[in-house]
Image (cartoon, rainbow, N blue to C red):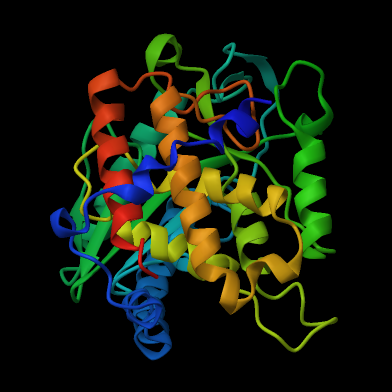
Length: 346
């Protein structure tokens, strides 16, 4: 299979000269490096949520009956955040679901009936700017090319983005490209009984879809959050031993955080979700296996960028590296290889 090919990488990565790489002194050092203060996170989240709830109240005053409740998303709510707990992401969904009419082949872009993407995003940004102007303690950043608005206050940032729920069962719709079986397989592996499979669309599109105001990008943010939140809690019913699924991805993010290549968090998370499927047993994720799993994830990423192929977890006919240049992918391979060498002695 494609993913089986990606998991293979030349062992020369582990044989790099030790004197050219700054080695990681210990696994404990890595674990400490990726810890996020729960107290700090709780305090900052309360502030961020207060600001976003204020935005929602303002939107509801401007348009009654249109806005649903705030939905948190992203690393800070998945337990995958690395670094200071000062960045948060929120989705502000509209209530009315829209029907998917068509899909742009081999992309996560869909044409929807109903409201124009351009109009919805533009009106959202205008409304939020008006609300922020009435709250001097909030700062606001918005660019024409990005659908999200960044709120700034008290040294924190909160990205807020408008979203539209998708009507109908897109998971089982012929031609949607969605892989329901791998999602249910992973949910079963994690023992999740209440998987959130809700789908939304957001305003970030590219390529041919940009010229169509009815085109939107499908978001799996709530599904990803549900899977990630369950990754280390699924074994509590059968064992008292904690698992280390999420700290594995946090360590890899930490190792690659200085990379100036095309590697982004979503690439790492995608490879990790695949890894959860290929190493499904809880025994694979105990503390004594942690460094093995970290190396495994780094090698999978290295192979993906070498091959320039990383299938989207939920839509496997979408290659997340399709638009990346060979130069950028080679730079990513070099950075990942250096990270493998840094932990060679652990």
